Amino acid sequence: MYKNYSTIEKTISVLFLFSFILIFLDAYQFLSIPLSWIGSFFLFGVILYIYKTEHIKINQIVIYGLVLTLLPTIFNLSEIIFLQEKIIYTGLRLFSFISFVFITYIIAQTDSKFLILKSLKSAFLFITYFSLYVFIAQIFNFFEPFRNRPGTGIFGFDEQTNFWIYGSHRLIGSFREPIFLVSILFPVFVILHFKTNITKLNYALFGILFGLTKSELVFLLVICLTLVDIIIRNININNFIFVMFFIPCFFIQIQECVISPENYECPQSDPIEEKVINKTVNEIENLDNNSLETSQDLNLNIITFQDEERLDIVSFTTQNLLFNTGLGFQNTNSVYTKYLVTNTSYEMYLVNRTLPEYLNIRYLSETFGTGRYFLTYQDINIQNNLLFNVFSIGMIYVIFIFGLLLFFLLKDFNQGIKVLLIILSISLASFEDLLPIFGLCLGLMFTMERYEDI
Image (cartoon, rainbow, N blue to C red; front, side):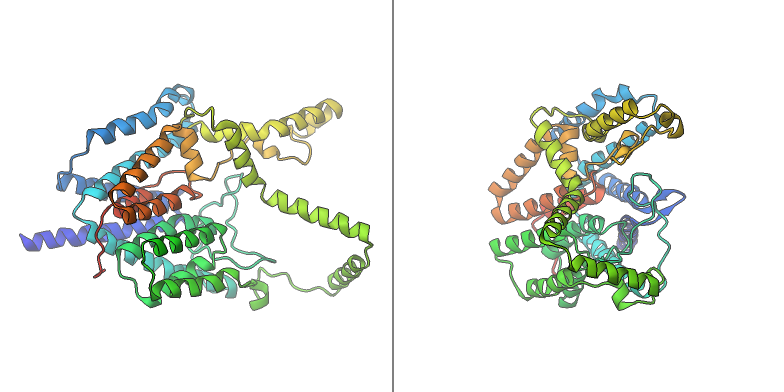
């Protein structure tokens, strides 16, 4: 009997490890299906097996709360019943949310936490080593597995960005963007930091991993993690090792074309081009004060444009939050895009009214000009987990979070602070869905144990 149980235990561990690795392979797909989606379905299946074998009973309050949060989506289903793409889109959103709630509850109740943490740690170490290798491989043109999943551009078939000609090279590892890596891996790191025993060498590697992403999000989260450790008096040599490696990796510029000028992606020098550049530099140096002021204004405008997405999100939130009763998972991004396209549509109207009619024939998209015309045919994601779910579910989502935090803070302050950190790292994630891996991290944080032998 014990032998059979041990075999089942090993099988579950392998399935968990397989699921976690697939979830971390965000930059790859199989037959047009992202490996991270496949990993999420596998994870849900393993948790469902644990739910059945351990005979875990789900509290009725959880079921009622789940139905209550889904009401805005259910009431608006009639709008997409004949739109296949919308149905698939909404179905995936519903799967993510339902599996998040289900996994959070089951993980908090299960006796298999040791197996889960062990597999999670192994997967995290694997993806750390792999990501660091990919960082080096991209700089020196070593072999790297083909990144076959489309990027996050507006056209849906954009290539993933892994080369920065002027800025510092950023670590993206097995993810499409550095911020995606941070969004998924940092909550996992927080769990391993509080629940397992990590060696000093691995803390150094983790500091390098997150530092090389150069992500503003990870800088904020590291500050929050440090503050939590100070509050609960969890400061030791491991904290210093992590921060000592994180800070220089975050701030030091690592330009690919300086370290590896022979890289095929780096532009090769051309004598004629160098003369033009030198001439341009000399002209800039001889500008008068008025021209310099104009140049400074231009630089300020460039900075503002680069932050335009964040400003759009803030503007949309401040104008619509008070009137929000829940748009449903299928409508949030559409409503957000309609808000953004207002100025662009007005510009299109003026162009079409004041320019010859042949422009409407010559440019079939009716998007003649220099504005953000992609907004007229492509929904834009809010790219913030908290705001997407607040607008999709309604303010009841904020009430649930506040109630959960209040419960744990009153029950055990130190434990409540840790739960707050996990919820914060998930809420700031650039993934809009409450992914199954987020539910697993949240459920693991609910437990009080620390497994020193993992």
